[in-house]
Image (cartoon, rainbow, N blue to C red; front, side, top):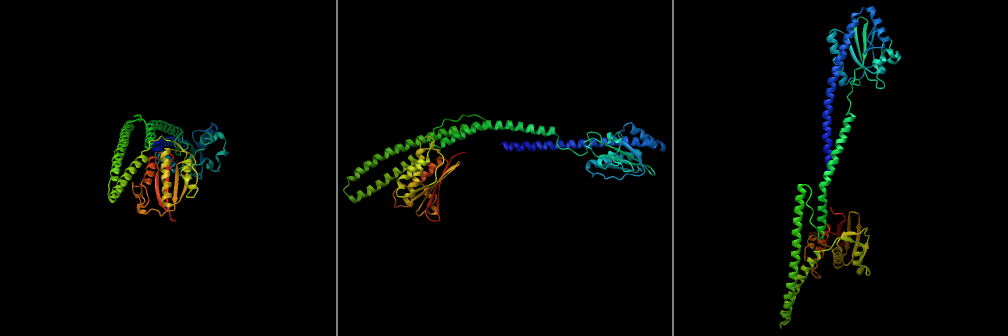
Length: 464
């Protein structure tokens, strides 16, 4: 949410800055054209003044202006237009050139021969002799044509007054248009964007944190509840949607707790009610004189008792009411594998790096069922431990015939058994998977290429 908010804020700030910058540049161009027009009117007044002077007095007036410290323009008279390297034309330079040319032609006459160009101060020439700006006395032109250390482009206007007489006018545009070229975002605007973005992210981060606290408590309570712990109701706090989620969770918690209590009572009653008639029937069967009939009744009663014990064992092994605590899985594996280590039927590879937060007896039943199944149907079991910060993985490889691909999921169903001749209830894998699910993990099967079956138990260490 913070990253998405940051993206939205940056896009909004970028769009607003672009709009603001476009408006700023439009107003700057408008102001630039107005300044260029004012500058051109001043030039036209100076040209009209020089045209009104007798030819002999013009050089004298220019000398007096230079000795007085210069004017807004640097003005000189030449016998031909000066040839200089001009700067590349940009949109703003072109706008200034067009405005100056238009005003001068309007004020001086359309027939006047006028040249308007922008020249770099380093390439600027002043007189016919080709003198550079740096070669002149500073009082002559430096105050009018330089702004050290910026040295902006110089607007050079050359106007033909008469045959062999060109009036040379060099000037700078007034502030803030001296540099001509558009600038990027001002530092104040960039600082404003950074400040507003930081404030927005700060307040949104606090809001997200405040709203997520009830959700974190809800997630922690749900995880503990999924492991069978007795958890208190969650606090119904936060936004309206979060309060509704908490209220729904508390209602679900009450229904699940009531259901588990009723189920436990139901199976206890079934266990108590069924054992008595089964025992009574066995006593009556023993009184039968027909041995064949007695054997048939005994076999039916054995099957019935087996079903009752299997159902009760399934409930007992999956309905595990234990507290969650750190479990030393190395010790659990050592205890479970010890009876088979002497004859080599079980081998262990790897080691558990840290205790696992779970239910001790449930995990022992889960791993024990996997090892017992491997020994029972595959003769040998090789345990491979792959532990890490995110999950604990136990691979149990046997040397049995494996499981047909179409039956890989069916073997987890209660009372389903591939080997009918083997004794058992057909509940081991189902119970192991149920216990893994209660810890947020999974039990999966894979037939190995070299023969045998691999049962993989994966238990996450961090449950989201």
